[in-house]
Image (cartoon, rainbow, N blue to C red; front, side, top):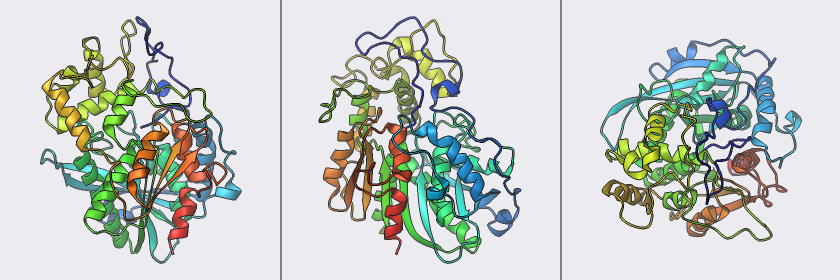
Length: 464
């Protein structure tokens, strides 16, 4: 799930949503947080290179090199858009600077969708530090929700153009942070463009929170990334997993599948995870409340972009679980046209004369309380089967959760911690928004992370 640094215009209180005016502007820039150009006058990237395609034929179709200095400059520009409200000092390259230039490779493979049996082409990213020898620790990175089709990790190969300007509207800035914090420090980073995203989606709807399709996508891209490393004469080392928001759920699913296959994982980190989809949906829809945190008078309201995430989930379950008509059966009649259009094109050109749904107004009355439609019941059963918060972990995993996260309440992470066993640990991030939690997990320290190390320091301590 993604979050914005500048809130959308509110549609009214939970009890009395405002009617008859549109809360959104006509561009995705107004929806996504910190939507602005983040790179200006940065150092030049190396030109696209052909050696990836020749050395890893069939695995890599595009390659770019980005310098350590350019990475630091991009992170410095992007940092404030995640650091809202401010909980961290400004980015300091002397403390957190990149150590290596990085080669970015776009991975390509074909996967079989478990839910449908279709063979589809998918893509991902492999990022390698330049000039580093010996086994490289491998980070499998799972990104958060993007309300577009193309803000994917592999989009970073566009940095082959030295004039390319990354922005929150077009690119995966969260992937940029992971590249700068891991690949530029000596890790190999492998990241999937989720099914229905990226350059090869060919009009396919995404598989948002669809468990088996998501796991297969992440696993297949991880395998292709490891194979490509070997083709490039780079030896893989220990395996680490990292994911934020939707990517945190995907990371937990991937962790569970790798362990089911008896694959060794050194450690996993998740930030702002929605572990229990039923609980998350009830919270977003206003059907579940939580007591205020100790010493807190109030808590941020669920964001007004959450209804769009809910529409995407309904469309995904409609498509991949064969629940034809789910979008219409689950949403109120006045939102049918909006929901169907948004699922089809992700465009924000809504009719401003009509009301816009919040999480609390989107669904039909009684959705969680009684039978409303066979498809709605099937959806609720399926998201119940896809929960991740009752897993016992036999490899280290750390949950980073914000104490002012507008999308995920702390209790939603603590339930998974309580059930996870002795290998599960938590780090509460005081005052952190949804995005701030993610940023602090990479650049924070014990003063912001409840005495815990950030992910980079924690992984380094285990990579021995």
